[in-house]
Amino acid sequence: MDYRVQGNDIIVYEPDLDLDETLDCGQAFRWKKIASDYQCTYEGAFVNEKLTVSQTDKGSFIFHNTDENDFISKWINYFDFETDYSELKRCFSEDATLSKACEFAGGIRLLKQDSWECLISFIISQNNNIPRIKGIIDRLCDHYHGKFPTCEQLSVEDEDSLAYLRSGFRAKYLVDAASKTYDGSTKLSEIAEMPIDDARKALKQIKGVGPKVAECVLLFGMYRTEAFPVDVWIKRVLEQYYPNGFPEFAREKGGIAQQYLFHYIRNNTDQSE
DNA sequence: CGCCAGGACGCCC
DNA sequence: GGGCGTCATGGC
Image 1 (cartoon, rainbow, N blue to C red):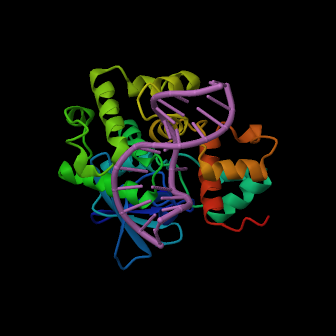
Image 2 (tube, protein in one colour):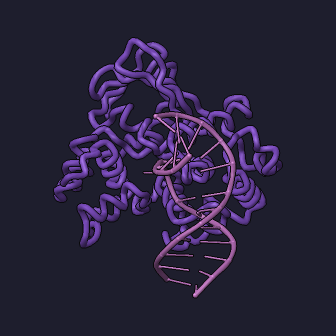
């Protein structure tokens, strides 16, 4: 990744990033594509740090109204710019299916999100579709003047007071997640450092957090790249392409591989193979 | 109208 | 420990 300061903006060159593939692939739900003169432009936030970012060409980006200190302290981390995804994809390409998946959507990167925001977001995601997940999270942040609520703010709510979210049966799960996180019976920062099976077990103490949501929180909110969320789509990939199990060599970064595979299978609905 | 959506829970055996 | 109905909501 290279960057330079240009006026109030940061100009970034990173061949292994595509904004559509990364910001609209179901790992984060607060990015909105807005009209612009560029190839694409997104508005969103990391917790409460807002950003408008454009892709001007393949591998070229503008981080609007961003000073160099913020870029270094926040966005390099969030976009995982310190990881060499070319190297990662070379490694994955040892496997035929992964090779195709990386080629299909090579601009996906794993966003290093906030664990609390991920916990809430992926509780909302269960048995839900992406547009509606975004709608619920929109209403949640609008309610707090555009910011994502803290666990303290959410902990004073109950099922009825959350009715405005129209999150259905998930509201009671949000209440439990907020109260456990606020009163300290769930310590997300400690869970992030635990051996993976202990971390899974700890997360599943929260009502509404099962195997899939726990795995998503570990991967997207705690950068545990060995976490491997299995949903209906990935289940299909595993059955179709990996009847003898997912290859051992890719498991340490399996969560990132999973992102490529998820996008690949979802956008290649040809099931004839 | 029924079906599905980046699932989890409660209850059954 | 696995199998199955149920849980809100909204788009198609």
